[in-house]
Image (cartoon, rainbow, N blue to C red; front, side, top):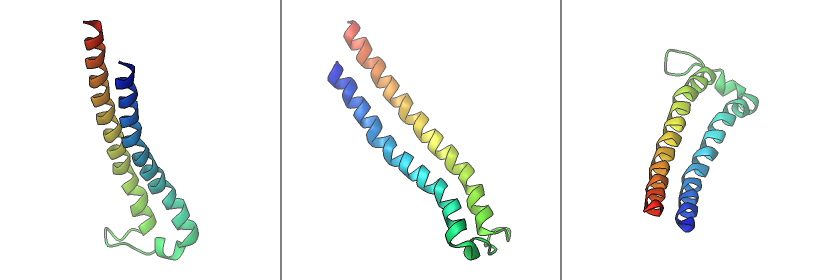
Length: 91
């Protein structure tokens, strides 16, 4: 049983570490881009003629939903697998 649980933990880390790295990169690119390329970030974009900085900041909301949904789906799947392992052991 213990090796199955450790395998599930490994699978969870294998999926979630790249997602966490992508999320952190996405969020920290906004202040970094404002520091290093402020001229580009202050120009109007093609959507609603708002600046690229505001567009990027607004896009962080759906990205947050995406990463929360990804984590929720992964955690639910692993929880079901842990429950199945627990049922196997109780028999």
